[in-house]
Amino acid sequence: TYRNEAPKAAKGNLNAGNITLTRDRSGAGQVKVNKTGISLGGDSGAFTGSWNGKSGASATMSAAGNIGGSSSVALAGTLNLTPASSGNYAWNNALTGAGMLNVTLGAGTDKFTFGTGTGTAYAGAVNMQKGEYVLNAKVGNDNILSNGTLRLSGSGSTVLDANYTIGGLDM
Image (cartoon, rainbow, N blue to C red; front, top):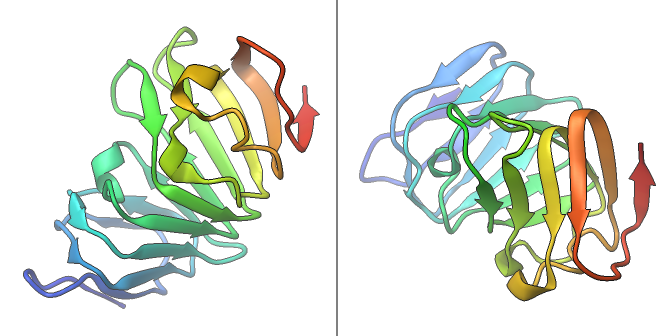
């Protein structure tokens, strides 16, 4: 079940699959994603809590506002990032766990970056399905995948501007 009664904190377990969350979320609770086929809609800009994607679960988001700018993500399952329109995408939410982050940007030339707020604890895989994954020392994201894997599939690519250490590279 999912509860979201503004102005209370978003909290609860997403135990039903193939659903879309359309209401805005706020507060500092924890949302656990336990099933597959969950679409994160609505605006979570005021949500400062955490998302917990369980192993075997999956969710899809189309905008940064779907999870909130200050929230954290503990990813053991799969999170599909599929922005609704073309353009560059910067992820700055704290990210932990060993799950899969599938990134499918609108165009092959769109750029995906991690910001310094992401941290270096993520040990999962970033699967670039469409777009460019950019490692760029100028934005301070050069160690974010030091424990994780970069997977290039479909029309995904990467751009490096210096020497970096990542946990693995699948091409």
